[in-house]
Every structure is written in C-alpha cells, then in structure tokens.
Image (cartoon, rainbow, N blue to C red; front, side):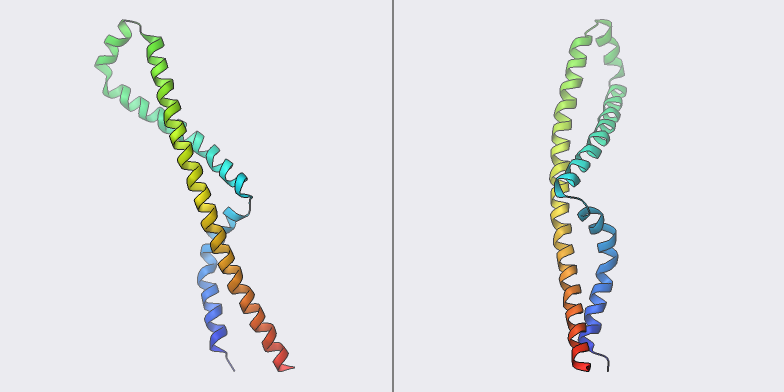
Length: 134
C-alpha cells in the first residue's frame, strides 16, 4: 500500500533538491570565513574593473575640461583624487560584498538544515515501516 505521507515527503524533497544542489551545496561546502573571503576577493577584482570603467566614462564625459586641466600639469592632484575615490569606492563595495556573502551563507545553511531535517524524517519513517513489516 502506498503511504500518502511518504509520497508528500518525497515530493517535497524532490522539489527542494535542484535548488539545494545548485545554490546551497556550493556555498556550504566551505567554512563561512573561507566563503566570505573568497567573495570579497572576487569583489575586489570586479570592483577594480568597475571603477576603471566608471573612471574612463567620466574622463570621456569631461574631455574638454581635462585638456585644460592637464595643460596646467596638475598630475599629483588628479592622481590623488583618483586614488582617494578608488579607496572609498572599494571600501564601500567590499563591505557590501562581505555582508551579502555572510547573509547568503546563513540563508544557505538554513536551507540545508531544513532539507536534511526532511530527509532524516523520511529515512526514519522508512525504517519504522520496515520494522512493522518484519
């Protein structure tokens, strides 16, 4: 006889499984600190590329003013402003990357525990059904 409760449990697990495999196992396969540091490192490279692209767009927008600026040879002031802007941008961006990674890890851990709880419950009902059959 088919147990409707076990069918529901297996269906719930089957619906959760693709999401768990895709998102959660990649996140939870590492320690939290390792995952967050990896995401911050990725964010550093992505943020550097993003800042360079924004800087080039800004320089292109202000091209006429830059010709006059560079004619006066204010290179130190310009480089100082660019580096200060880069530092502030990267600090904010990396803090956001770290917080996002920590929240994603926490959410993934909760999803993993829910999945394992349902799986454990299904295994327990399976073993209790086998004991009744004997």
